Picture 1 (spheres, rainbow, N blue to C red):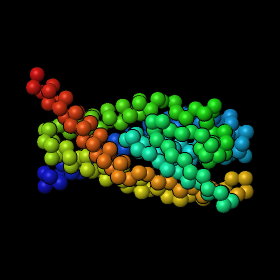
Picture 2 (picture 1 turned 30 degrees about the horizontal axis):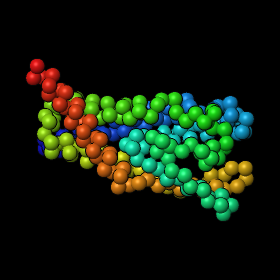
Picture 3 (picture 1 turned 45 degrees about the vertical axis):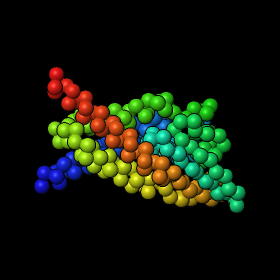
Picture 4 (picture 1 turned 60 degrees about the horizontal axis):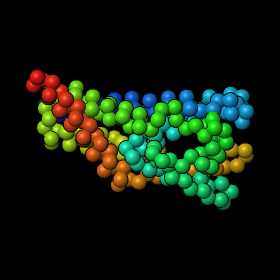
Length: 212
């Protein structure tokens, strides 16, 4: 029974970290949007909807790409296909993203309010805080740290599954199809390594404080 309680705690903290991380990334994208550009491109009443939609999807991508992953985006319109790769570090912001969000979504190419290294640091701190708080449960037992990392990685895979879909989007009377794909193996390995190391570091800090 005690093992089941541990796993529930790990799962709850994994969900909480993911929700907080997603919210930070949603807000980061939302406040990066060029609202004036949207108002000039969209009918009245659609600006808020497009802003929220854009923030949710780009925020989710940004959260997953926090783990140094890469997203592949393919756009198909009138038989013409365009592909672009995006990663949190060194991302290519040309062409397709402005087209996707009706040309004027990002003011002067601005993509993010927060620098990418800050988003990575926030993610590491969130996972480390879980290791710190849950020290009384895992007590720097490496097996327990691996279990937490496994649960957290599985949750991120579920998230990738939900956003790794094809969307049909109508723009200027045309149907545009978007499909998304992540480098799955690299993402899984990096999520697992980063979450394990961060969780263990939080537990180590707590252990060090208790020994003093």
